[in-house]
Image 1 (cartoon, helix red, strand yellow):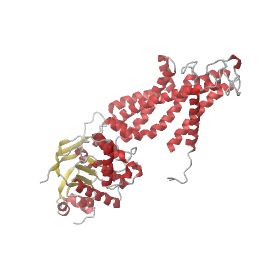
Image 2 (cartoon, chains in turn cyan, green):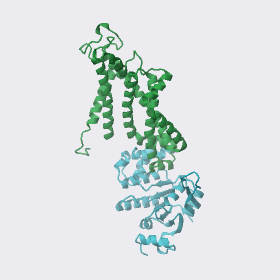
Image 3 (cartoon, chains in turn blue, green):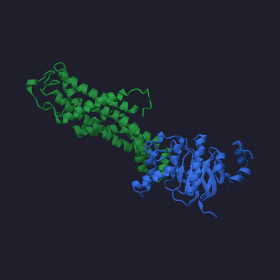
Image 4 (cartoon, chains in turn cyan, orange):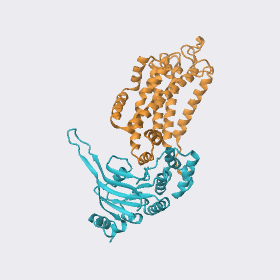
Length: 247
Length: 268
């Protein structure tokens, strides 16, 4: 049995609604309702659900960006994230080389030439020329930006990578290239990926196991083949037929 | 690489840069050389007109106006630069902290900011001067404080816009601290907006200094300042018009040059 890299038990996240008057009672809205699941090292776990089902909230809770109740046990020190929008996730005032060096600078274990070397090798790993280090993000296309984002997330060799709809903002041909890159990096670095998507076709292509989320709960989970071909929950069925996948 | 083939020439930048350059050159020359001692009086040349000997004529004490304009524009420029420096420095710190952290401290500081902002800068500086006494350093501090709110507000707005961007979240995930995020990640993104604010602020500072010196609460005699010269010249407007015209023209050129430069840089 492979080692567990992430164990989530009874995870709930709720959010306080803003009161209109001080006399109203505080209302809290539960976004995630007692989620329990785990992830193994080296696996690509798909997380599927409609908008507002709590996928991104789950990712942010795992990364410790928001307060939560319940227990999250991570076997890795600093999981990293690739965001949906490649236009917002790179600092527009800094060059690509600087952006990639920053995580290493923050660790402070390498000197400048070593960092430069790592940046060049990482750029090549994600399929970019070393000349890109001197460019500003605005000079890159969406696909190139997303490659830089992936490179930045991998600089610290995170072990666990959370990809929040990493290809939704890209057009179809570029999507295929980025997915290919994910698969290659996954096998090369023995990386575990939590792959959030609303695109069931992409998930089928990429993932080993899949969680189906609806309204803050996991309604179905299991190996991709099983969930796709022998779904037990009607919501999964409606998602599949909405995506045009006939089983 | 020429990307825009039909791109218009940026005349604002050229003209503004040229004007500012010429003024700066004069100020630099004035540090090392003036045709006459700016404070030397010469009764024989009292109210002398424009001539080769006195390029801008002489004032009521027979002092060479050209030499005094050189010295006065230096004073005015330095006061304006000092003012903008103080305003920007503290404005950036205040704006960054309030914009980034938000919350109750932000509310309190910004209401204080609004209160300071509500007073005309001259009035505020006047109050300060009446407590501290007048002089060029007091003017710099007084105007500097009066200029902080406008910079703080601009920087705060930019920080609020930037702090929820994904690249900031990313930096936090990578382990960057609050101060590093504020001043290394976000601040460079505010520079374009800040630069045009500095340009406008500089102009306002030139005018404010001239205004204060004109009112007699700025730079004190015998130090020359463009505003002071205007104030002194107004009594002799008909006997020696050159005395009033030249300092006025220099103020206009200084402000115009900087406005155009700021505009030009914004469009670049």
